[in-house]
Image (tube, rainbow, N blue to C red):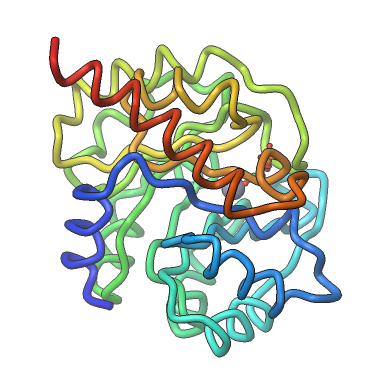
Length: 236
Ligand code: DX5
Ligand code: ZN
């Protein structure tokens, strides 16, 4: 899908839940994806970990390619890797529609964000909970998306850190409406509302979705909760 169309669609539908496949049953990935599609998911979040930038390994290019083969949903690829410059082209070729790099791994991210856009994907920049929001602000015009980490990256199932809410609020102001804001880590039915209220357009949810037996029901609970607060906010 064309990057501009994808962004316009996500903005129009926001807040949107992005299931994180990290929490899926990898032995049955295709059926997990099918269940998510049937539950109404409109995007998939894929976490790439290199055991270097983060103290864990997840999956890499072959899995992104495999997911691309079985689903037409946009793929939101989160690169938790030390050397993103070497890999963005390959992840795009593997099927990524959004590619997000960490500001901690790319102290001069402009060229890389431009390259992601040149490759036809949406360019995302993300920051860890201890990283000040000011570290991404000089680059906002080169970003289609900013992903605010609400846990230290590397593992699913951690507790949401409220510092993310302050960052979302500030980025909503400094980045304007054009910027797609995403939040990742510890998002569940309790934290989705505050995230949406603070300005999140995309809510990445792993454990908070896959722990449910009924994905459709949980996905609509998460979506309804976040839409309700957004609707209240827009009336003010
Ligand atoms: C954390 C990853 C997340 C993770 C979120 O390093 O970037 O995308 O899957 O998982 P939960 O929702 O379980 O915190
Ligand atoms: Zn992630």
